[in-house]
Image (cartoon, rainbow, N blue to C red):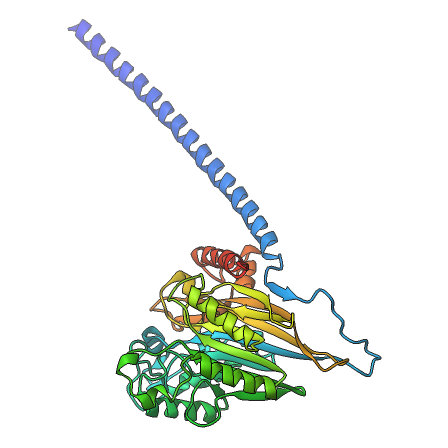
Length: 420
């Protein structure tokens, strides 16, 4: 019996020893795991800091300049023939999607407030003499709709106007969603708000010529067509500037005879295509041959390349195949990447000729804060926001949004730079 007790004590001692060894092994493994985790986190932190430093350096690069004359022969301040500088800004399609209607609705007052969507961006466009865009929605007495037949609250137009836009094309594929009456009602309301409108044929004035700093600038606008065009009446189709070579040639001749610079706004191209179609290129060549000095495209809902070409006289002509959207609720990452295009014209004091002097852009982004946010949609300055995040202000946007901004900036640099 004594031997059995000794055996049991031996077994208990072995068990105790094994438990201690197991404990020490587990403790060692845990310590290794902790060290690995701490090392990994430290390494990742160092790598993240290194990456942010690289991104800060990259964000500091001036990538937004598209064109600038190499010879700046602006007259000396003592000269009697000073050059005049005219600044224009352009944005793309202005849409009011169904989600934007829901976001802007204020149930307590049964009104709409779109102002927060634009509050971050107004300073970037209000510096110019003319700020133009394309209004791709109607303002009629019909029920509001963000898709299909598009019709928006008048508060939306007011918010766009307050953001700085003062000239709009109303020539789009949705211009006749509510027929001639709807087009007329939309035009009347926009002009009542103080917008200059272009793109319709509701009266004899199909070209807008504005005088800015003693310089006459002509604005023309055309669309490739309209929705359900085969079902539209002749009266409806004749109320809108649907692109036609014969008509546009006559209007360009009139513009060139009565203005010193001509800008054509084109609603054309394929949805969500970052490359211009062959048709866009053919029409652009036609417009250049007939006197267009700047061509500003829209409709694809994404950014397309920009380029400088020379006309018959050897003067520079600027083409932006698509400026994307100014604002929309389209849930497509490329459609959230937008820009404000800035164009500088120079009227030379020595001979009075108006030339394209500089083109650059400010990258902007349609931020979706989610359905539960007080203000779901807002336009933000892409580069400024990304730089703030990279400099340590990680509260400004989420890491996911920051990464989307970086991708968007890369996309802009890649697409805008695709010139031939």
